[in-house]
Every structure is written in C-alpha cells, then in structure tokens.
Image 1 (tube, one colour):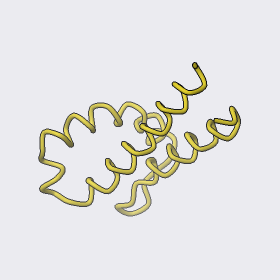
Image 2 (cartoon, rainbow, N blue to C red):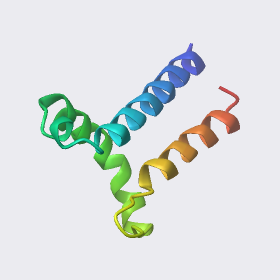
Image 3 (cartoon, one colour):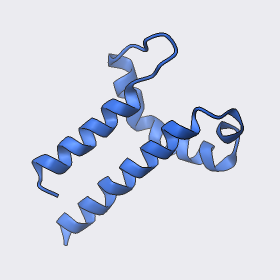
Length: 79
C-alpha cells in the first residue's frame, strides 16, 4: 500500500518536473495560471539544487538533477 503510494507520488513528480522544464522554454506557457501553480509546486524542490549547482550560461540543470534524484530513490527502494 505505502510502496504503491510512494511509486505514484514519485512518478507524478517526474511527470510534473518534465512538464515544468519543457514549459519553461515557452514564454506564453510560463505566463499561464497552470504554469504558475506548477512552478509553486516544483520550485521548492529545485531551489536547494540551484543553491548548490550553478547555471552554465543560460542553462539550468536543476530539473535534470532532480529527475536523477527521483529515479535514484525509485531504484534504491525498488519501486
């Protein structure tokens, strides 16, 4: 039960991080209410990574690192 719920939450977070990252490429998407709500949900997870990992040029690698962490959690807990 708990394993299934944790799997669902992690998979949902992976999808939301991907949507957030892809949506950030398009200005009209970034200005939408949906993206603002998504940003409010995902940004607290990305902020600690951004504090440690600098951006390279205009490229932010924090979503990639967050995805790697989420996949690592899935692998470690065999979800």
